[in-house]
Amino acid sequence: MDIKRILVPVSGGRADEEAVKLACNLAKKPKAKVDVIHIIEVERSLSLDEPVASEAEKAEEILSHAEEIATETNYEVETDLIQAREAGQAIIDTATERKTDLIVMGTGYKKHLGVFDLGKTISHIFKEAPCQILLYRGSFSKDNSK
Image (cartoon, rainbow, N blue to C red; front, side, top):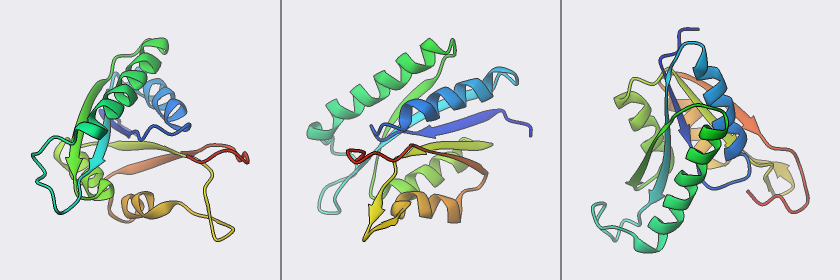
């Protein structure tokens, strides 16, 4: 597997930390570039260019935390905050534009109607990704909401 660029979408969930660590460790040997992105989903009633102040501060904290995790693994990442209508399509578009070789994502153990559910964003990425995908699923816990 020839990896030159890895994309790590983060949402602030518990599994993000492991996804960032995994991406950095995978990137070390081939000296691949690691891009960590956070998507703010913007309602259709608002302009995509209009900053969503209520979400921006939280997003910056999430990206800063990802940078800290990367530093702990002795790897440098680039972070980016993206505003889009739908996170899944924004991740696909970003992966395509940046010629990503691998998307590394983390997800918590979520249930919908009593059944494990990947959710619409991850499902969309699995259907449309232009590259390989590595998914880290966190362990089950009763208070695991992310």
